[in-house]
Image 1 (tube, rainbow, N blue to C red):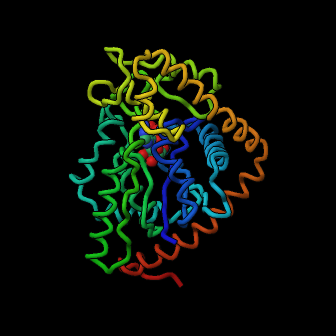
Image 2: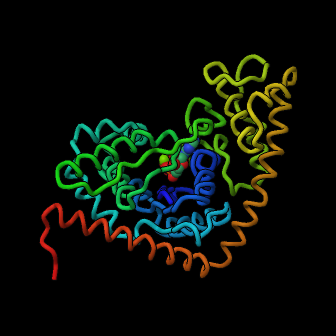
Image 3: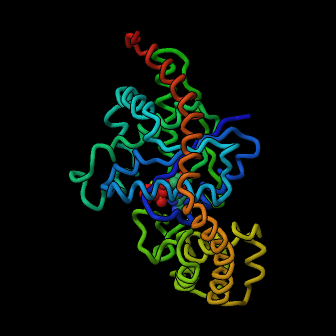
Length: 332
Ligand code: ATP
Ligand code: MG
């Protein structure tokens, strides 16, 4: 079975619809005929300041959410990044293969450091894509299911893999991005040209999976829509309506064309009202299940420990190859 690997940061109390439709839903589907490694990226989370107690809580909440959406620990290794030291270790070697200018070209650093200014951003935020390359390459996956915002980092990962393989010896597999075109970028409900994001979206712009469903319904009903009144999919002219249609279509498995036909002659209000119902029906059982899982912290730690063991074996084997090829003297 081909291997897949992906991660998600514990940077909020809840995942949002962008995470779910852009990435996590594919995780669930890929379990059927792939060998998956899924991790909670707490090393990435501290590229911006985190409260230690909150970070620990959010890491467990992330695990609970993954289980609630259908990640099965018997099929998938679910693990916590900081528990596998090989990620940080391989990252160092890859940093030494990365050009400074090459790292500078990563647009997510520009986006994420824009607020406080580049001078205030951490060096960790700058080198984050290289840690991400290490996360991926350690497991030699065939595919990496992510949203569109990660495509550039995947390219860097492939470049670094190729460079290492060429300079030393073939060690890494070149992973392919697995990006679903239709849901690759879910946008902010209040600013439909920007991506929905845990750290950048305003509360009204983001639908959190664990929000009170009534709150989510209200956010859908207050989503910013476009001028005009016809309901059709057109990202350029109608980014707000197009985003709502994308969410609607992917939650109901109905085609966009089918929805356009149903809403021909109806108003934005009708679409929003119906979508709010669809969203409530989806999030209510998910939220109940997550809250139930969070009551049993022992079970969550057991799942993470099982994942750590599976992941550690694979990661250690790759790291040992790398250490030997780079020319480090083996310890006795
Ligand atoms: P942060 O703002 O802290 O970076 P995030 O919302 O970008 O958080 P991540 O944990 O960085 O979430 O990303 C997890 C996964 O979700 C990645 O595969 C990413 O590509 C995907 N993703 C994030 N936002 C969106 C979005 N708006 N649309 C589609 N996919 C998304
Ligand atoms: Mg992100």
